Image 1 (spheres, helix red, strand yellow):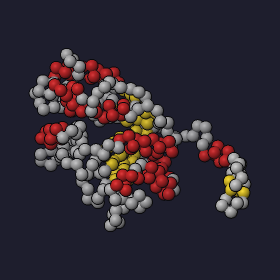
Image 2: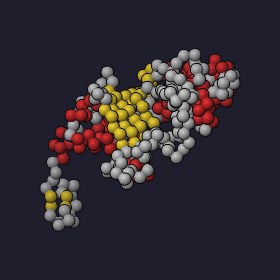
Image 3: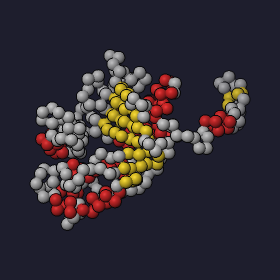
Image 4: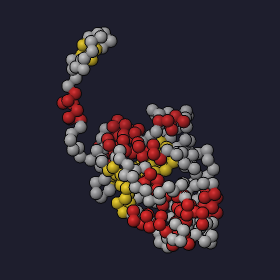
Length: 294
């Protein structure tokens, strides 16, 4: 065997001429490639669209729940992946279910183009299908609550809270948020995006995003105010007066407890005006609840 960085030897022992890698590399990876918006994906060959989608699907999760990682079907041939593209192509919604009629997806993610040329994570969640379900998504009459943002199912929320869930959760998650974001970053790197943004829908979501490397475009001062006022003697701490199950004094000490109290209206204003950003591959190191336990 001849050792050389310029030659690759086939099993037959014949030398292969050096690959002209530099020319190929420069063509594939220009210095400043233009970001590809989501609405451009429909112009790509279907094989490339399929390859990009596969980046979003954790292979170990598929195999764990009996989903073929190649055709994305179960043993009976049912397709268990759902992809919806917005009418204008600026948004994509991904779902993976463990069974055709499963009530909740195993993983779910929605991304969209923004008006500023970046990509936003609109929704990301996971559900353990073997965990108990708490119907916080519908009220006692069966009408949608939109995860408690429009109306609430207090009885179900209390049960969910006692079971260790956070606001908006119908089941325990699969503890793969970091893995899902990692795959998101791989997809965005393929599309030449250096940054992406998110708008956390609850206090605990913002803390989770922080702990996975996000910083704030808007709302960091508010998050630090919340942390300060949940300290003994603070405005929010004093409001934890036991007047509802979501306002017990000990809730100041945990991310989940604070989030339930905020969900219960302890701020006297809706949860909003928080926007976050992350640079691919970098951790911003922001921590607005130092030492805070889940």
